[in-house]
Image 1 (cartoon, rainbow, N blue to C red):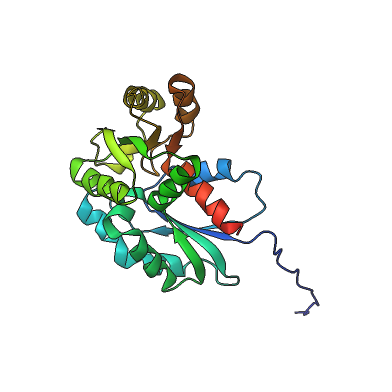
Image 2 (tube, rainbow, N blue to C red; image 1 turned 120 degrees about the horizontal axis):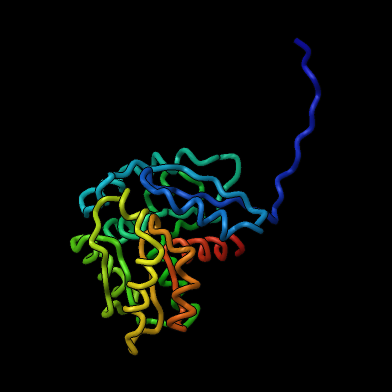
Length: 235
């Protein structure tokens, strides 16, 4: 064997990495992030966290103790400015502050965000506070989610759900179903913006269709998370 000399490239300080913790059952968020960050030079490193095939408050709460192990699998060569935890409903059950604490136990990261925290930041940025909330979840999951939005100063008085607990079905809810449901909710004159909840819901193609029909801002879990992570990574 011959040992050969080599040099090391310096990391680009203008392209800091981002971390993303994705649910084991999620089939959507990575595809959406490829679209949102298509022109970004910043690398995104992904780790998976064990998650149940059925969504309930109990299965969501179980992820709290798994967060440090998932965060520990992210690369450690460079510190992170931001890591995103890709679960809206679990963030409402566990709590955004607790999610951040658990990720920071094993990951050198300045800030941890999630779709719930990101949605509140996005709503403040565009100046809205009254959401029409479209959810795929069963009622026991919707309750803490709506309460978390309320604590963030966001009204979800206009609300509808597909009432689906099976993640494999959530990800396969059709674009046309999402568009029709969101437009029905968004037609309420009290609504300032529409929020499509769940990182596993395929909303990317639905958003422009809804906006063209309702003429109001349309936000989604993945859209808001990507926007917030990009902003935090740039600071």
